[in-house]
Length: 577
Image (cartoon, rainbow, N blue to C red):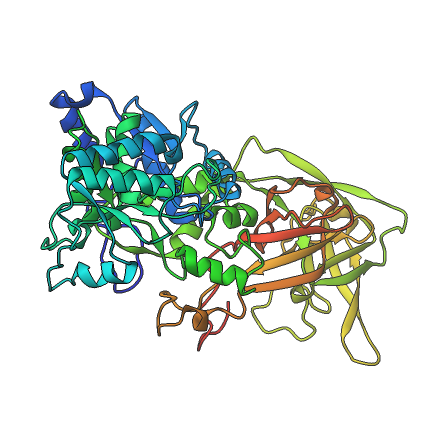
């Protein structure tokens, strides 16, 4: 069972694709199998991923991308990438390029099948004229406010426009003049003539073209009228030969309109729209409008802030794309909405990193240790394993010297009974190096703070064991003072305190004030010098980290991807782990 938030419905019918290339067994596949058995579409399977280029993709889009591309691949079919760019006031080329980059980052390729709804503007216009000629569309002079008033409510039918019964000739003339730019913005629309009494508000003579003088990112000022999404989408699918148009559940009420356009224009072998549950996470907002508020209000550092649910933010944080796809697969495909625990996503990411990330030593809150009986000029290179979960990962050499740093939390002057790390007179193991014993504690005379430990080492323990076989309970990670590389480490918690950020009505009121903690003065082992941006490591006993683009030649910056276990707690009323 996939973890869901408390009080939420389970994932009825959710089935994961567990093996790459293996045919899935979810309800979409059942529909495809039935279509093939009936000889529909000649056995073809052709899907598309159709984002609107008005923002950056987020984790919810990752599920849609996975379903669209993997369903096509599993059935020997094709998947297009098509930008539904019908609203020039919100769309930008920047978003187009970012979306292409994100889809590729997730591991999918559309080949030579990159399309835009704007590729079809002339054809869509001709379809609109055809609807007019068939008596199925008319030019309406109602203002936007009047349109809303005439539409009716969920319990009351709408009213017919006084312009609904214009002649075909008048409608064609007015529509062509709309295209020619004779009328001001918002003064006229082209509407489908369906049923103002329909219980489905989408069928109450929806607008299919509006006058909008706005420069389009691809067509420039060629057009001053633009098709609405509900009109452009099914017809773009038909133009491209799409067979199965996979959408999230919020489009279920739009399906009758999707089918109406195809039937009204007598499109042969029309595509079919199939809806699946969208992906929602606890402690997460995916509304583009609200994500924009976070960015523009300065609550986060940008669209690629590692706390954001955008794919750019997850990439910067260090989430492996393979883990995101695995997560989508394990959540599965369902027709029942559910909110998935953010902890489950972190669990899947952690599993992947445990298998693939090299283990390294990093000290986030350094305390100096001087090994008094170790020669000052001696450097001992000790062998440390790279990843015990990967037999092929091998080992590396790490320098050990007279002066090292350990974690400040790994020493206590007066330790409790079950504290097994360093204390006065106590012996511990240094990872891969040797045994040391604390002989003296040096304090700042002004503050009383411990600033240095003086220890001795057992030369016979070099390599981490002794001839007499004695054992110690504590093993500490460390870095050589002479060789350590300076670093800044950024620790993250969920961006919101509550599972439902909308709780209480104001999502900004639920922001976690401790969602980012920046640690300076950190030190990492020298092998990380020059590490490439995006490189992922397990910092022993701290968690999994990735190199951030803010890194310079003089300072490495790391983002914590996930802790070693689910160590964060709800802040209010709970003690932190």
